[in-house]
Length: 241
Image 1 (cartoon, one colour):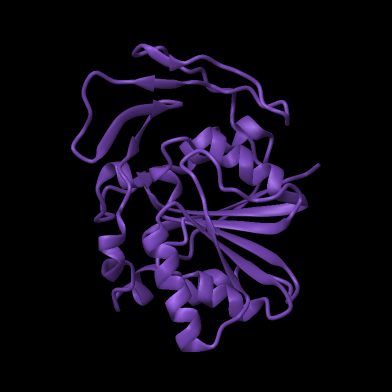
Image 2 (image 1 turned 60 degrees about the vertical axis):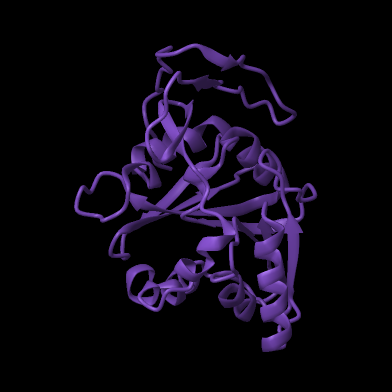
């Protein structure tokens, strides 16, 4: 297991949410509200990171851009998930289903729970299911603070360029954690914040150190980081309970 030293949360601004506990025993680090926000941020900080704004459904065409095959290598990402045919996988922030359909092909005896907070995105996925004859994807309307997944119901969860946009990251990972079965994995893919050459706005990138810091709140095992992607980290965390 990889580990980082304990990180202190510095009270740079007024704390807007006091620390509390949830059922799994993780302590909420709290959120901080800033008097001003950066251009692509929402003015809310979590563990020292400003949360970025959400890409809306009107940007669905960008999610399906042809060059994404080379930039993000989605088929290789799914291969590296090493899924079993009967597994249940949650695609959190599924968007237009770019990864959901690829994952569905790998779990013919299982299913994909495509979770998104925008009904329009789920409608896009449903329309594609009909066109492609895919039956093992189920749309799930999430909330900003809840993925709406039953406890102990999934074998894996994947978040592709989505986690940095969660306005309630603690609550979302709490919900995913509780939905994971023991040994379940979280695949978290984010643009590399350490690399200034990655042509993505800073708040839409995350460093490996920051990701591990935030996942460590839940005691998730940092199992591996795969850096075969041109611009992104593919980080794997495992629920060890």
